[in-house]
Length: 108
Image (cartoon, rainbow, N blue to C red; front, side, top):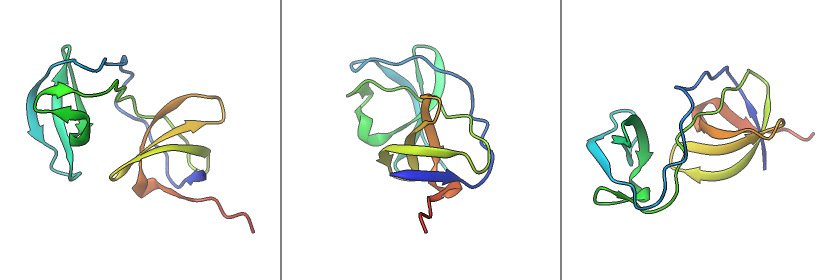
């Protein structure tokens, strides 16, 4: 599914892929997005969906990097996790964008 970005998104930096089995410390519920939590993985403060955790252990590989995107850019939807979408841009870069800045591409 193709989506259009409705406003510029700068993200919060580039992160490595954290492997399943990694310990997450300093867990605190995210105030803005339900079912997400703040935490620290291997010294990196970040956010992650609660579905990716079993207590304080990552249950799958996870890269929290947000995609840097300009207004009106086109992205391909890869995965939906509550209020966030994992997407790929036309250059092949993959990252997260909040659904609040995405809309379906109009093919008419």
